[in-house]
Length: 274
Image 1 (cartoon, helix red, strand yellow):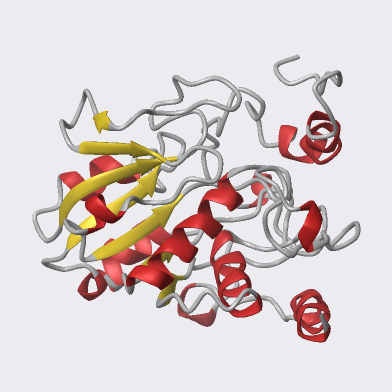
Image 2 (cartoon, rainbow, N blue to C red; image 1 turned 135 degrees about the vertical axis):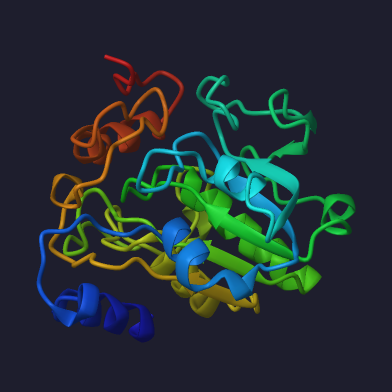
């Protein structure tokens, strides 16, 4: 995969991204959801949105992306999709939401657990898919599997995908371990990445789409103020637990090893929750 190797090399050599007005600042990073509603609203204005998210996806002020979009009269959320653990983190490891309605918003809800993707029926009520989930930088974390499945289905269905970018809590400079071989791919190892991929979700979406020829119409709403060397504590952002395993940003670093153990067999204890 010469292109893949070249991409990882190029990412490690990129200069710092420009901050607000091109001036270096210690201001907090502006997330993709905030950039969307402040600068790129035309991407979704008046459109029916299928939102892939959960309660850990919040804006810079700590408000759920779902709530931000539901309360914004410029857009219309018509469908919610949730990853492993469910929209409101009520499912255990390997479990998520069933098809039904969200008890808070009343909107249709589909759980995209394991290798699931948006159903053809639900996509009939959607003009665009918006993906906003907080990844942790480890190949074994299933939210990147959800990203891959969303892009796969969207490419086949010709539904555009907007990815709201978020920081990699481990930073953007660590690329560790071998690239997974196709025959070993699973729900805890879906895409052609090393064990730690050093990318944001927006960068992963572009990598998947290109390397796997998914033919999805992908637009990434970039962060403002983020630089590759930043770990989560450098961003000035509030951390919301992304699952029962990742209660604090530092757990993202531990999970690189724990996630590999958890995926090795039923008789292995990965220590999640301890």
